[in-house]
Length: 112
Length: 116
Image (cartoon, rainbow over the protein chains, first blue to last red):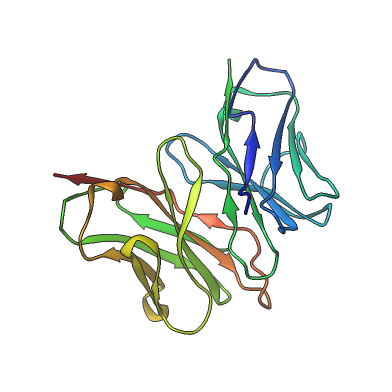
């Protein structure tokens, strides 16, 4: 069984740039959630996708957007990067319902 | 609104000692409750979960947690700490909307150190 994989593992950008982070779901999972984990904090929910549709969103501005593809992989896009966007971005997949979410190792994004 | 409070950002125990990590939650609906562990430079790994049924939940690596509705608590314990338990631990709550999990709301985490 293939777990959740995220790419890239590390990324450095400058303020104002745009970034795309990618996530491959665990085999058989149809739901993907994205979280932002700032240094020393717990993860914060960004949004969730279920069968290619956004299925819930946390308190993040519209410059955070996402996609889910027919194979259930997903992208997180962030426009107009700000210094506070520096964080570990975690992707988690699940088979909807009451099944637990399985996390990838994250993408470490640094904004200079 | 749901929230999670983890008491103690840093807990230090000796190898072989009891591990107790505290978690209190607030929720207007019956919650699902989780404990995750995060090792340095890695994602989160599920230790255990409570959905319904038995309130004492056993997880991986010898950890267990007890759901106490009257105290709105879900504390994590392990009878005997091992050096490999050193990591950061996160408690999380999720609304139980008709059996659907919804998004996870995490506490700020507790870093566990284990002294030899």
